[in-house]
Image (cartoon, rainbow, N blue to C red; front, side):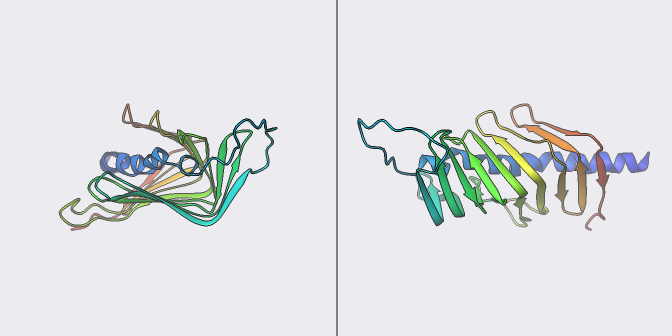
Length: 206
């Protein structure tokens, strides 16, 4: 009973801070690379759409700023390719950094990312890791490091949902939770861990 109570308290602490990191990740959809690339099509020219890139960029970075000139988010990548038949953009080795209004940093990396045209749907493939570092100080006192790790993460930025059909590991400080799959709905503030769910509680800091 004591173990169950400890797990419940740890999960309660995790559920408080999890929306911060997931919403930081979903913020990248507000300006995705496909919305910042030029239109190379010629007026009046009918093109046959194929699944061959119509443009690409290598060793690039794209940054987005708010009205006050503060950096909101940035995307780095080894190479990006746009496919005209599906109007999708694929990025090799993406590194995505987003800043919350109070300056908290969320970082997402993966082997590959795929976004639709308006950034409303983003998929991270292969060693997908999303982290928010510990933030001691006035902004978020004694907030430990938070990490989500899976081989696949699927983001629906307008619906504010993140899900994966593959195993996921969520760490907060010394606490760790594992599940076979998960779904988070920010509108309902519901996190659903599915399959075999396991939790481990780390020692509490004095």
